[in-house]
Amino acid sequence: MSETRIGGIAAARIAAFAAEEAKVYAAARPRTRAALEAGAEPWLAGVPMHWMRDWPQPFPMLVAAAKGALIEDLDGHRIDDFCLGDTGSMFGHSPAPVARAIRAQAGAGLTYMLPTEAALQAGQLLSDVFGPMRWQMATTATDANRFALRVARAVTGRPKVLVFDGCYHGTVDDAMVCLEGGKTVSRPGLVGQVEDLSRVAVAVPFNDLAAVEQALAAGDVAAILTEPVMTNSCMVLPAPGFHDGLRDLATRYGAVLILDETHTISSGLGGYTRVHGLKPDIFVVGKCVAGGVPTAVWGLTPDLADRFAAYDATRPSGHSGMGTTLSANPLQFAALVATLSQVMTPANYARMEAGAARLCAGLSKAVSRRKLPWHVVRVGARVEFICAPGPLRNGFDAARAHAPALEAALHIGLLNRGCLIAPFHNMMLISPATTRAQIDRLIAASDAVTAQLLET
Image (cartoon, rainbow, N blue to C red; front, side, top):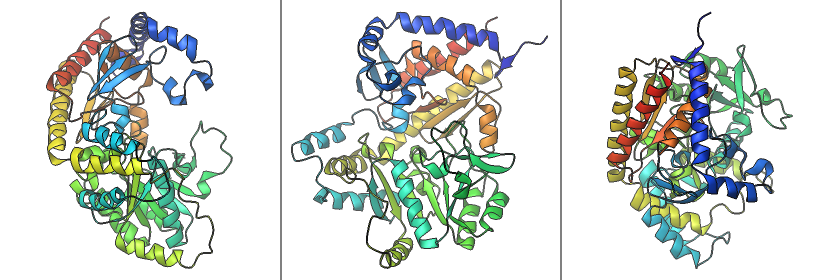
């Protein structure tokens, strides 16, 4: 009987390695274990956010402090951080200009449902960095996407959103669909799902313009909602001409094109949209846009803003279904101005690009030397190794390339060697604070872990 292999590595060896590394992790963190045993019980399932259980280690790591591209845990381990809050801290933990802005605002009020002078400055900076839009604030990109979809439905009078199979748009209900046997269905595993999401959404494969056109031809699609690059599972790059085709089809069929840059903000100054000259009707970005303070923004082109204003003038007064009380608070504006003007700079992006190129080249060389059937993908400061051959074309390919058991073993192996990467995929980010030494340690640790996994 042939041996089961995952990503070119024996499944039995993966399991044995993961078990060994789990013991190493636990033995190195007695204070963390004791603190969890004493204090985790009040939280549902022992953690304040459910996905904190989804990291591959046997119990969560408790963070004592983080600065730049380093995390220190409760047991005093200093760890090179390449997860960076899954993009929330892409510019490093507590960038100095953001920390100063927070301190300055803290004594002047944290929320009062009114704008500040910094809000006016932030609006101009947003247009300078991302392009001339009419902006609105939110607290998360999930909220921003929800509000953007309401605008799209309002101006088109249509019910559906087109998303791509395997997409990532936070926890927007409408995007929680997938393709099953060629049909749009609710994703498996959704908690408490009662609505048939196929009534409000249609899913098609990424990079398939013919499928997009077929869906749009039905005449009931208000918006196309997409990331410029798929990042939910294993990263999928757009095929040449795909985004030009999307823009053309959206215009031809009267759909609003929404680009969600919450992860692809790693592409460079202004995001993938500005770097590659894309032309969305609505632009969304969150996570790192205010240096880690919970903030998202969404912008409408002037033409779409005028269409929405005309619609808004005709609707009855009452709740719009958009906006949350703590959004657009002065702390957000202060952090947003500091990030856009002093942190999200060409010089910082150049450092991030150079570091990511170094990481991508080092990992690719190690994969080739070990003769592994893997590939490495980079989008600006974002790098991902994928434990399958590439390139990937769509969400179906990405799902098949995802290797949970192997990836979990790799993640805990890297953590035990002082390197933290994103838990839900093999994503790594380079911040302006990330050093060449940290990058080289990650490359060496990755090579050491794969070498051990390949031992028989």
